Length: 224
Image (tube, rainbow, N blue to C red; front, side, top):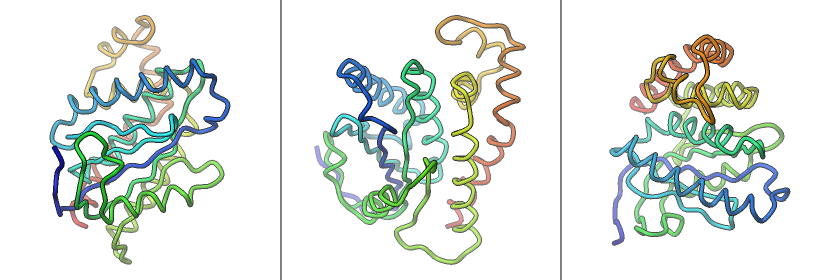
């Protein structure tokens, strides 16, 4: 079933960093990882994520988000999962968040849809350079406090995430789901760890600041 809409969405367009170094078996694992991510995202964010991730060319992907204010949190969810779940390859993804209208979404291939959010996201990904991994762009940018604050906030969060180790990414991944430090310790991959170790990773990742940033971002995007 195809979906015809004309509402503001966020489109995430991403690609895997240094994907040319992946071996064939790593590409297969990456494909399986995106499949798992789709299921987890739709379960965790049922109102925001209504379509599976579209994975194309093996190392590129797109995701449509019906609630744009959740776009930074979902981007963080994706990056942290990739950083620890496939940590032996030290995977990371660039993510361009484009906010605008989405006019058409093919049910089984969201990358074939169109709208200003698609255009903003695709163009933004092409501009990322150097160590930059995440950025935010609007289909109709304006020089307002809410717009500028949201853009800068994504850049700041990106700088923090890029500096994290796999263990810090995992701690934040579970914290995003509202788990306590004891619960995170019990669910730790590949084996449970002690709560003080979780506390250390939470502290080093600056999670309390990240959490406040996500709340501020949601408010800014809602005001936009």
